[in-house]
Image (cartoon, rainbow, N blue to C red; front, side, top):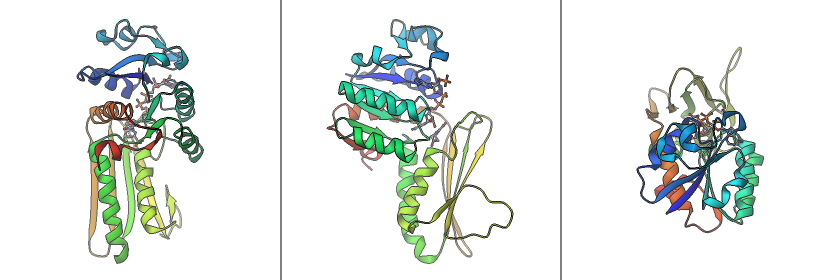
Length: 263
Ligand SMILES: NC(=O)C1=CN([C@@H]2O[C@H](COP(=O)(O)OP(=O)(O)OC[C@H]3O[C@@H](n4cnc5c(N)ncnc54)[C@H](OP(=O)(O)O)[C@@H]3O)[C@@H](O)[C@H]2O)C=CC1
Ligand SMILES: O=C(O)C1=N[C@H](C(=O)O)C[C@H](O)C1
């Protein structure tokens, strides 16, 4: 049994993970951690409205419950908090899975340092489809760069998303730049803005869009578009639960969803 302490337990992703975890025989959420402003109760069942979690503790202090689990799963949506949770996990010798996006270079450096002592998995998108998209984009960029195709990324998310561009769009851009060399990332154009050696990454926000990513390869006389459309958060939640099960048996190291999915 993999026992998970879930940070951001009452958020959109947190609740999807709680609900779906009930389908797994070998993974269990044993405690929730939330921002103090969201703590209406110290009972996860009562606070989430999912009665199966009645009696499971909910707190704003990870240190009070970290001893209950083997893995800390973070969907707090707060990069500083996510790194803090990983630091505490390292102090207690627990594995960590981070789904929170908006991580900057310094956060990733801190997480890599911690991964010398504990297994750390960081992934901006835990769905099978997006991880396959990343592979396909890598291949398409390799082939089409020789033919002078331009590459652009468009992502669309719900009105409440805090970070832009999305973590997934930035990961796609990283894969493209690994192939193209150190070209600029451009996240908006206005006025006189001729295209240079660059990859455009554009973010649209509105309504309840779960998450869409399109990578355009634009040549002369033809255009290839690779699109992933998420229509349910369950795909991310299942990926996160499977990542927790996987990380529980890993040695210290820095991992991504690619290893979990065998891609
Ligand atoms: N890797 C993946 O596959 C996916 C990643 N994401 C990412 O996951 C993150 C969460 O998304 P989503 O669930 O939509 O966001 P939500 O805002 O709905 O949920 C985040 C929850 O965490 C709480 N929180 C904030 N700070 C802390 C803290 N220090 N400790 C514990 N809990 C805290 C928030 O409280 P409050 O509202 O009071 O701040 C909120 O309840 C985002 O970064 C998003 O981009 C989303 C989907 C898939
Ligand atoms: O905030 C979201 O909702 C999502 N965030 C992730 C990201 O930033 O890439 C993944 C997914 O697209 C949903």
